[in-house]
Image 1 (spheres, helix red, strand yellow):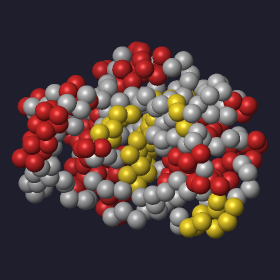
Image 2 (cartoon, rainbow, N blue to C red):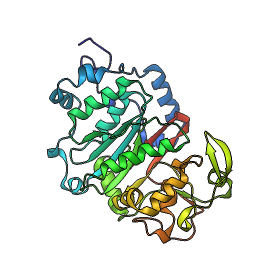
Image 3 (cartoon, rainbow, N blue to C red):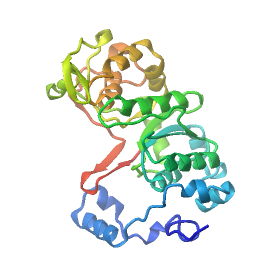
Image 4 (tube, rainbow, N blue to C red):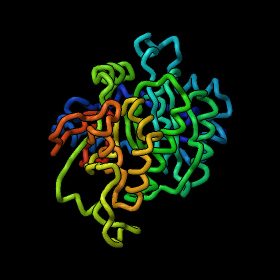
Length: 320
């Protein structure tokens, strides 16, 4: 194997203890900490692995791949974690090494992971993800791969494909959806404890504001308004929220299997930014009795707690 910066022949998994980052200050958006991190990043630019490297080299020996990657084994998992398995989806289109960094951070052998690679991505990226999944028996490639375009239903559809795939596995308690450009701020045990504290409730943002009504008032084709839509089915009131969710298993089962949810999913297909409508709306209509959903009456703006975002750094980090 050729010597590529960042691979097993060099340093595939960097020693982050040497990085001069004050994480608490970064989360507070402290100006000095942000400047320090930006300067460090400029002086130490990330060098991505070439696409195909996992398939051609790094995953040829799975035992070696797991060992060098320091993947967590069951003996390192607490009983509390083992009794509360999680399910993740990761939707990606680039940089398999960054995705593998994310996967390594959230990986536990009793959890479940579905990976969807954009069909329009370099085919070598899918090959890399398949090679990684071959080495990690609870990591699965989505059963159907589609072209994902921002702002239209395909972005939501990729998530729904993974949700349906993950429901085949009966043990997990909560579902968390990620993109390939996220990273956890909490350990698996901390995430488990946060989700257990929710006692079955979903962490899904909800906003109702007239300024967003244009998104679902009209039919859209590639962001072009094509006429008024009929009202939503089943007396559903539309709300807006983030595509990022932490949802109970019961919520996911309802979303995928309930006829009313299926009807609303079909209704929302030709709206604008349906990814910000479907999950939030299903969580904020109490008459539907969706498991874990909001049962109040006033949701003008109900915040999401499981994501931290720093636009200045152009990243979004999942915090559990």
